[in-house]
Length: 97
Image (cartoon, rainbow, N blue to C red; front, top):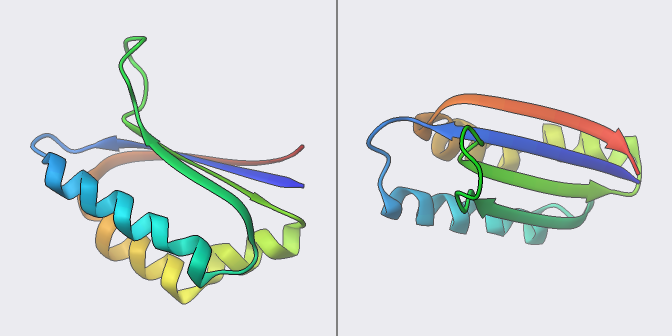
């Protein structure tokens, strides 16, 4: 199993409506990309200072499934048109579980 984690820092002035739209768009990915075994997103709830603003955790049965997701046109479109306009920084990691 491959676990993918992406963390985002929002640009100043990003609205709650924009984050709601981000939630909706990212939430569509599991129905668009069958290679996704599990998928969750969430906003930082503010327990600790210095944490990232938003996170995505997705799991895939294999590296090939992860690469299918990473290269999928729907995924790339959401990243380019919904995620990138809202963020100042991102961190990503994939690891075996």
